[in-house]
Image 1 (cartoon, helix red, strand yellow):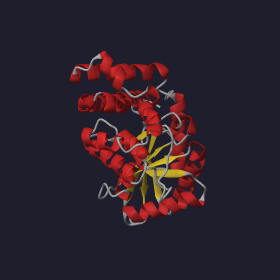
Image 2 (spheres, rainbow, N blue to C red; image 1 turned 45 degrees about the vertical axis):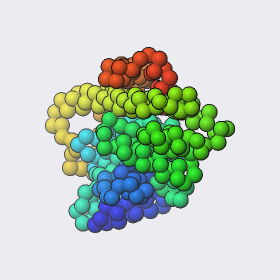
Image 3 (spheres, rainbow, N blue to C red; image 1 turned 90 degrees about the horizontal axis):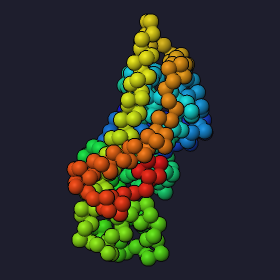
Image 4 (cartoon, rainbow, N blue to C red; image 1 turned 30 degrees about the vertical axis):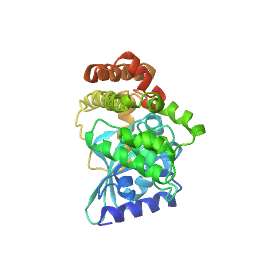
Length: 310
């Protein structure tokens, strides 16, 4: 497993061998779709019910010495359904027999994803729509990828790609090709599409406001998990002889992290209803301040809360 590509193939095979349902997303999926040239790290969406199999598979691999498995220093949550099904990420390092270290990030409830949709040609990969949704972050470099994935989806006959278009002219042109009976559902998921026919002259501004909402809501969401994890980690590291990650087996690491997460009360669901509403309010406030967006514009443009923060 001397290369990232070879490691990916073997890891996929191992997951299939033990019946773990998964989808590759983010950077490696962008490489698969031809949008990105290369990336070393990988992101995996694991069906929540199969997390125990994944944890057992990693323990077996580490115990057999075929690879070395370890939680990373910033470990996120343990590979446990109680946390992972509530939006946490778990960060793992796997060192192969050529001493090359691979970073794997695992999700079960991926950010901004309401349903795990898979690529039609290779179901080992998340669909372009899922990857585009995950790429709606506060990093400017992700937004051209969002648009590229949307365009690809439309070119392959999936009109849902219009949910990710970032160019007004492209949106108008594409919208005119979508059958009338399919438009209402698309508008429900992305309200600004409703203004294409009625107020096309405001479309560029609407796209900018919507993007700012996504940028702010991602920053707020990430901030909740980051602050929560740092608070937990500060408490844990006060223990005598604390060291993380310790030079021990992955099984022991997992046991230690799981115990600590319960002992120091790492919240299983830090983004409960009140926190979700606070994040939404802050994202609207950011759009109002940065782009002078009015309450009327925000009400007309903002995606539903279940889309922004599912």
